[in-house]
Amino acid sequence: MKLSLTLSNKTYQVLYDQAVSIAIPLDFNGPQPNHFNVPLASSQTVETTGFIGDTRRGGSCNVEQLSLTPHCNGTHTECVGHILDKRISVANTIKECFIPAVVISLTPQKAGLCPDHYRPPLEATDSIIDLASVVDRLAHIPDEQLAALIIRTLPNPIEKQTWMYGHNDQPPFFSIDAMAYLLKRQVRHLLVDFPSVDKMYDEGKLTCHHRFWQIPEGKHESSSVSHVHHSISELVFVPDEVVDGFYLLNLQIPAFKSDAAPSRPVLIPLESV
Image: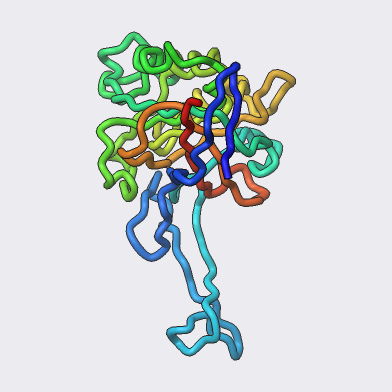
């Protein structure tokens, strides 16, 4: 079987047999990433009268109760409901099945070396995704390919998959300037390998979340200009063997009635015909 697509008068072969998941496998009984020191994701055997959900203990099958916090326990996708009073489901906001996507790699910069801005004001030691770096990587990428953008930060050690992000480990985040540029380029789905597009301790402003979804800062209601079908995926992991370039993205999300859910973003390579 062969699949192909045409975008902006260019035809590509879809290499579906080379698809790669960029989700961090969530080990409920082992090391796992964590944000804000929330309880670790965990599993517990279901036990009721006359039933044990563990074949190792004599049960007929394995049945576990899983506990997790999607925003903090691993790869997840969130929707505009993350910052609204109205409860909106992530499963209902993402309509696309295959999304043109670009992978880029960049090194976060120290805020003191950049002219970029943020609210609250940047500290010199903040590590940011800055405007100049994003423009440099995307300047020659056509808008048609940028429905989704996946950012791999450098360096890219395998240990990222189990990092505990806490008080002494401040992850990178977007400057206002860089986020404004992504909106100008019409990015609808943003995927990053750190825990939040905003600063970890930002006085609760979530400045870049508000900008991405076009919700006024300090407000929790959408309007006719809000980007209600855009998504943010955080804590992905892009293996080194995935080269920067153009892909199809299949953003796999369970049908959770929640503003966020664990997700499995899959990148499908493309080859020019």
